[in-house]
Image (cartoon, rainbow over all chains, first blue to last red):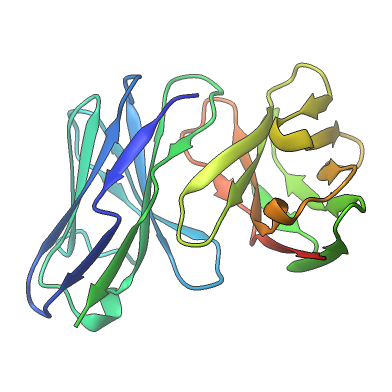
Length: 115
Length: 113
């Protein structure tokens, strides 16, 4: 099946700094990418939907200035957590989906710890 | 509006016995339905999908699911559990033409030796 590569898998940063997470579709062009946040023992919470070449659509309650999403090409989307704080510590997962009723393919996830 | 309800938050079975993970959905139009598996600190892997073809769908690792429109269900089964099946399982629905996926709350599957 298709492969989505997410990097880094684990990152520790200091409070107040910014962290960038990359999500790449390796063998298909992803017109739509999604960013999720997952709290321990919970389901995935959709943060935003990004379409190549346009602004991301953020879910209610997600701060767009804090979680910057860029989808500059059909194979790359990035999530930047700006001015990170300990409460931003979480597991972040991206997914990519092509047109039609196709399934979404997920990255391996990024464990962010803000100290 | 779409929604998904996974009826059990935790299922525990013995190795070699059948597995049943239950999922009910609500969708206004013809849905696409998926089951994903997540191992600890990993992304999600597709087990199987239903997209209006055969109602009995076979997936990877011996899993299968049956789409029952009259019951709005899409339960996941496996005849014989293996230790490696221990993980979190998510039932997911998407309406045709819709970008978003709607996730169930997840079912944690534990396999006892």
